[in-house]
Length: 147
Image 1 (tube, one colour):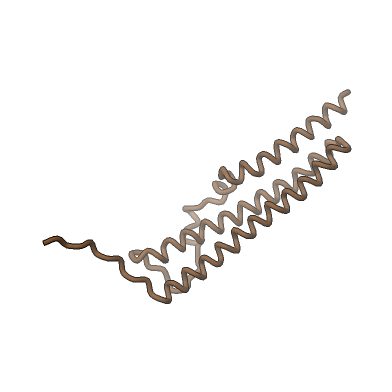
Image 2 (cartoon, one colour):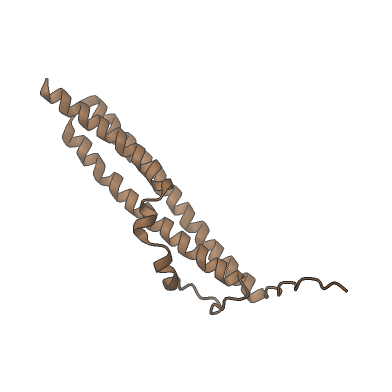
């Protein structure tokens, strides 16, 4: 006689609602991150356009300020998203007990360090390319001053 593997316990309606709430937060955070990237491209484009026409090193260096600011803000949003994904995974796992409708992600902070998220490939590739372009404009402006 063969025994079938134990079937997973069904998820209650309360747990489904909790998962839907967490998913809505993850979606809002991802949308916020997308909007931050859009604003970054817009502002970087303005600074790059001005830098190309004026070749002022002061302008190019000042363009780095919003770039770093958006990088850090995007890192914050991405970290929050990852924290809620960990909460989502624990809510759907029957072996882990999570308080009903809890949105507390504090227990996951050590698993998702903020600095590690800021240095993630996703953010470094996006903001790093913009930073390299800004540095190229800065180098061109400094070289133009030396002539």
